[in-house]
Image (tube, rainbow, N blue to C red; front, side, top):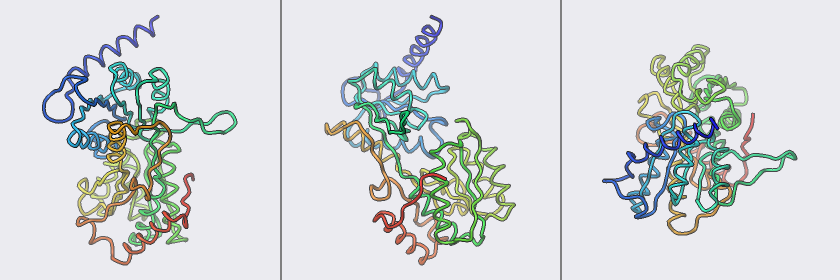
Length: 345
């Protein structure tokens, strides 16, 4: 009874909060006057200059392109996250998006309880049964996954080719299989172009808070730089802001993740491994708009344009033409299946 009371209170609080959340774009439009999309952000929320901000940009782009009304919820603890999903489902949104692997269980259960509502989970974590078989998501849920290992392979190769050191660094956020994909791809890329190089990999923690601990990120990065590492790739959410600070302090290089993070440490960000969360969110909203939305597993890699790395006016001077050409060749070989990038350590 007490638990039910707590859930009801949480839903009421979330409902009141939504009343003050304006749809994306100018002015508030009454719920139900157009396509309505709800987005619940991941740990770290807006302003992480990475994963969540990418989802926000994709939703904003859909709002401007299609006149979609987007309603954002930024949860605190886990109960707020579940309450946010349920609230949006109860409001009969045309699409409810949960941003981050941590939403997997909540999205699965909520999608089952609301079979007539469409859901999408960015970085949805596929589960297996007792026999090791993959459990498919509910038919009204799109599981959106990235081939992070492919982009990580390319930035690993880049780091090895321009790092001027046999030691390369990696700082992960939460020590989980999803982040292991980044590490595995990075290691493979390093080893592909420099077999005798080594990768020092460390993680900020074992809870979701590991994605929002810049102090810990700086501590790990400084330790790696002091050991002889010249380039560190981070896959750690806002914890990576500490990695950038360490790069500035030591005059060394870092590689961003998910979005272009050059502005975090101009002159010290070699590149960023991009996960096009914005494009994936936009794509699913467009599928709802055109009536082509389908539940199931969607994977986005180099071939689909869901993964890449930054090469532009900001960092072109740090990447020799010959290195850039080789990276293009490696990308083509990955896309063609000639190079199979590992997904686990």
